[in-house]
Amino acid sequence: MFSHIMLGADDIEKSKAFYDAVLGALGCPPGFIDDKGRCFYRTKTGIFALSKPIDGEPASHGNGSTIGFSADSPEAADAWHAAGIANGGITCEDPPGVRAGALGKLYLAYLRDPSGNKICALHRMP
Image (cartoon, rainbow, N blue to C red; front, side, top):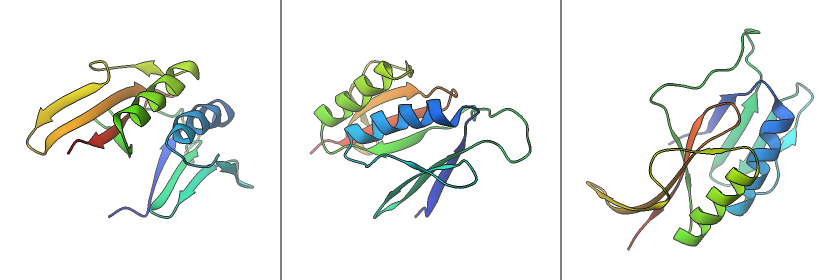
């Protein structure tokens, strides 16, 4: 459904270190910084990117927004969460764990990245 997602970040290097750690825990290679100072993570299913806002204003997080990353297992989601905490992320919502909803049982772990964006690792339980 998506070709890419780009988030605003004021400190690209700090955000890159954070996302290298959390996405690395899910098996994604480190991001690369292009000649415009943006950081890109490419996978066979899409691109995740970080950029300073082009309008020159400070980056801000979307109130009510969450970006979810797919995890292969609850253990991968836990490793993602631990990597985030160790690299400047802040835990938010409930602790990582199973939640039941309209889409079945999900294993969810939530963080705020160094720019305040809310992100999630999600594993669909059998």
